[in-house]
Length: 221
Image 1 (cartoon, one colour):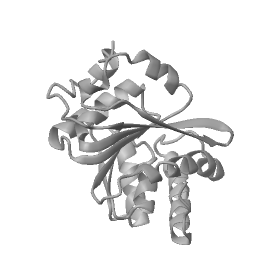
Image 2 (cartoon, rainbow, N blue to C red; image 1 turned 135 degrees about the vertical axis):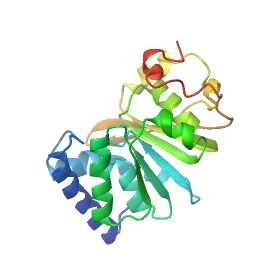
Image 3 (cartoon, one colour; image 1 turned 90 degrees about the horizontal axis):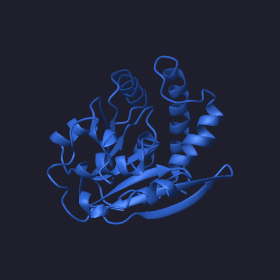
Image 4 (cartoon, rainbow, N blue to C red; image 1 turned 45 degrees about the vertical axis):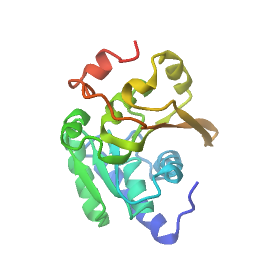
């Protein structure tokens, strides 16, 4: 896990304070205790920094909510351009305020569904990540059309990911993805997983489907 310098830690601590304030206006995160947010959420997201692309370019936090993990990426990797995407406009408004207060010039906020963003910025991003968004298969379908060939989909998951993986019997190649790479770690005594799906072929033009279809009619069944 990355070791923060003083400036990065101070900026992330300020972010947590802003997140607590914003949470009273729009439900962005469960806990309201800054230390719980730090120990259970910020530290969790720091585990993803090592798998971010080495080169400069665009990365996307899909279903960003309160900005996790995208805000952590922006602070730890100022060389990356980070897009925070959340379809709930009230959440996106709070994200924009936090970005402005923190002076993060490498962050853009989009208040759109992933399917809409894919229509505008298809196969543009080096990496698309999602934390606690949905079933792994659904995350893969929503993210795959946004990732450029050679890039990756990153899903942050808990122990339930093993059951989700067992349910997906169709080949990942249907989405242009390679088989998942799993990385495990522990946080506060709990098992956590990073699932990396590398994009090795163009995503079929039929993906993404219409909004809501990924959840209602899973591609792997």
